[in-house]
Length: 390
Ligand SMILES: [Zn+2]
Image 1 (cartoon, rainbow, N blue to C red):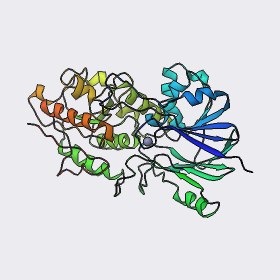
Image 2: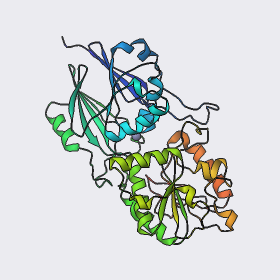
Image 3: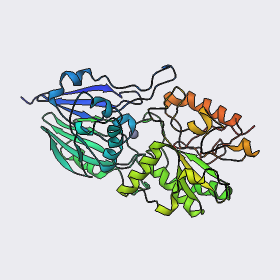
Image 4: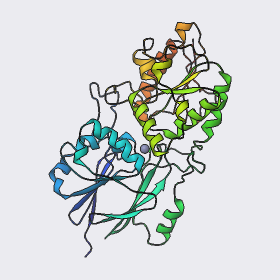
């Protein structure tokens, strides 16, 4: 009789964050993602929430590896904690591994793992598991759906994906391949749990944001523009950079995660950003607005995650120390109220309250955000709540 297949979720099921599943067959354990969760507002004093690793520690000798589907913190951010106790190889795309590597290196644990790069459409054996990596489009590039061929049939784990027919990098979700597997071998079990997947409707293509940004930059010619997005949202960063360069601006980054991710993505060819378009924030921070500057703020890192952190706000600039940021001061000090903060996206549900509090605080200091009921930035994937300057 074929050996049974056991799937255990250590986190991430029906919640946003700490995605981690264990696939178990014939005495071997394969991890699918190992993420962390940012704390909710009702978790004061909590920096991060991790999956419960007890089961993995108890069966550490049977773990054959971890498949990292994509580079978001809620899918790979737990690795640098689990590797403190265990040692196993990690499989993923070059970008996913690069993003994970940054965190693992920061924790001094690179010697506890082997990072094994896999490519679109590749099929390989991990322990006794037969794994195929199917490309999917997502807000961080180079993500995979995972097809596992087991003694109990084919298991498809879609990971996080977006059905964007015109993605910024042209890399589509390979629906044809998934369809071929479904109609050929058949899929015995489909595991799919992407953020907001239970909301009706559809999201517009990420590419549609480019036109909105163009218009915004054009309307604020000669002014410095500060914009924010997740440090891993490289498609968005690409579009912001392209619009900034086309309007004669330079681009500078704020925050360590953003700086590291931009450098990594440039090295991997994921981000096309000419070297002379990128300037050091320290070299221009005191300069007048002049031709304008596009700053990219970062995703909250471990150091500054707090109950108010929403990952999309200018927490350094406009939230924690609104008027005393080392590099950027918002409008009130110049007596002007027309600075604009294009924001990245609607925050994940647990962060929405913090998001709103941040809006209130920023608006108190007189800065306006792009987006609002009448603004084209307000659509499902870039939706923002308008507060406006008072
Ligand atoms: Zn994701």
